Image (tube, rainbow, N blue to C red):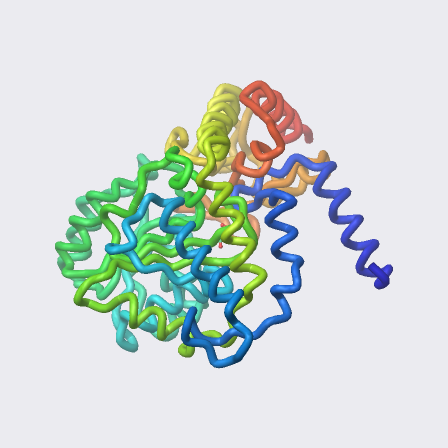
Length: 398
Ligand code: DSN
């Protein structure tokens, strides 16, 4: 690379990534093949439209790439192409979710989504996001004591509010989601069920987390978290008389986006092939094992794990514990202090609100921890035991 300034910065970031232990659950490390597709000449081509219906010439190869990516998406999640339609063009997760609402929810219509404070995403209807400005969020949260979903309450809420769409799938919820119950809740409100599986997509593909597909009308996902691909997104829609497929395709293009990023789409195709392999199945299972070890060990040291454990690639740790050290001497560290202290020692996490947090979002009561990135690097249970020990020691330092 001739641009030495950027080259140096890329090298510095590569070095930083190698040096640290990365426990941010939404990050991961790509294979060389995925990076190669991402950095390829495919970037240079304009192909507004869909395969066979482009607005620019010279798109024969691009059509093949996009169709291959769609085919691999169906295979990775074991879907019947007669039942599911796939759009691989969303540039990332936020436009994917926005496209679904643009297609399905009338202006100011109701979106029932988990509140950000309890583990939802901005695009599930939060007021600072376009999704909360154009539509009305009916926020739901978790149970105060158990810190898990209360499906009975959700059913009542859906029956009362009759939202157009219910969004399930979260950014900081560690437990299995009962998709069958979410389906019943959506039916009770006569609502569409959209699952945003961005966080768990890799676990679903690898068979380590229950699949939402038998129950959802629409599934959106980013491709760069547990799925271990480039920054991009996919929308899956059921094919039936409601024509969600046609409506959502139109909302993506020309409704929201112009030309698709074909280098990204090719990189997603490579990712999906990798995610369909036996070694990825092992990876997904190892991610969950590693997270459980990390949560259990921290719990043994006295730290409070939100909801008491995890079924997935992540969990929230209540480092503040109402400002008090418990009998094991753990607690009294705010989320920001915890994150800063850990970063100084080479462990990267993100500060995160816990459910019913009494502290502000900029310095909340906890941190979010996950194992996807470090499992990619080959770390196993014994390594995560050692990481827990280090975290405990660092957090206790005055
Ligand atoms: N920002 C992502 C995360 O870290 O979970 C969600 O989009």
